[in-house]
Amino acid sequence: MNWTLNLVLLTFLVGTAFAMIMLKDLLAAAVVFSAYSLIMAIMWSQLRAPDLALTEAAVGAGVTTVLFVITIFRTVRKENR
Amino acid sequence: MPGRILIILFSAVGTVFFLGGTVGILRFPDLYSRLHPSTKCDTLGACSIIIALCLYSGLSADTLKLILIIFFLLLSSATCGHAIGRSAFKHDIVPWHKPGVKPLPFEGEEN
Amino acid sequence: MKKLFVILALAALGVVLLWVVGKMPEMGDSRTPDKTHVVPRYIEDGVKEAGAENLITDVILNYRGYDTMGEVAVIFSALCAVIALLDREKRGVSRSAVDASQVRSSRIVRVTVRILFPVIFLFAVYLILHGENSAGGGFQGGAVIGASIIVFTLVFTLIESTRDIPLTLRVILESLSVLTFLAVGFIGVFKGVEFLTYILPGLSPGVAGALRSQVFMMSIEIAIGVAVGAIFTSIVFAMIKEENFELEPHIPEP
Image (tube, rainbow over all chains, first blue to last red; front, side):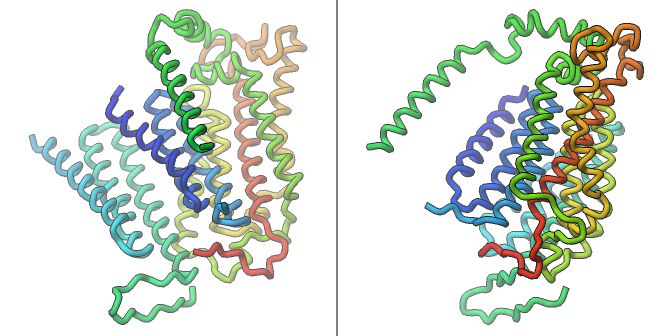
């Protein structure tokens, strides 16, 4: 397995996870979560689990993001502190 | 080997477009101008790299799949750019203009 | 002070976790117990015992059949929770924000979705039906079906979607997966083998690729796919519906 590709993907994964926690704008956090799921799907297919990659891409990047965006659209966009 | 040169050429073009697109997204001032580099990434950058992959894999079933990927990529990414730009326009997000320069008239048109 | 304590605690936890990861056997090490006992059993007897060529499907539906049944029940109860909170949409009355606002979706987007929707749906059906022999399966296909219908609903209107996929049909389809699981399980029980056995004595021979050995598995896959698609659709419909559509849709401030 290509360790440079894995290193880059894992770096991006940690970066998106941190960004997701730090962002105060929830819509931006939902978009970053979609990117996180996409990287995770690539990781699964790298680890030779195409079934999981399909699930992650369809549910994580597709359906969950739509549900988050609808929820944000219905409630508030900013996280208040 | 002409084939290998073509492969290198197409991947290099794709990488250059991706680099330029990323720099553009980071540097441009507002949403409308950022849409321009981001869609360039998807269409020209990704499509050049996939064409390079087509040439690399030769005449096989993979090439057909890659050509289908190009088709769907062009269709969906261009539509996405259009939808984002239109929705921003409908929500009255005013385009950026250089300070001190008189902006072009901006008004929402019907449909 | 409190922050410092939290950071120290997290750092200590991270060190412990990294230390444990360092002790773990390397990925793909052939001497670990799962490679010496479990994997050979799956590879050698999976097709005979479970009946599908794709070993992942064998594991998901047969060796770990209870897990899958639990997952399906979890998704179904998630739908129940959403409906208990938000109520279902009313046909012809409930509209989405797109219907309520004056702005229609652009013609370019509508044409693109009209081209893409059948292709996505076809891919979903392929995933469901071909799950026994290649990557994919009921859950993945169902998720793709749900995503395609969500795209259709977001671009076209909720009114059109609820007309094409009526509520009465979805109520039946949503409960299909759990029902099919129980039915197939109890068929095995009545034939005198364990719950959730797909290779029944005297009924299907258990040869890879033969349709008769796959008929139960196939029915479960189709039921899971259809039900997951219907459940995702129903959740999204319940979430985007709006009854008082005279109101302008709430536009988040930029």
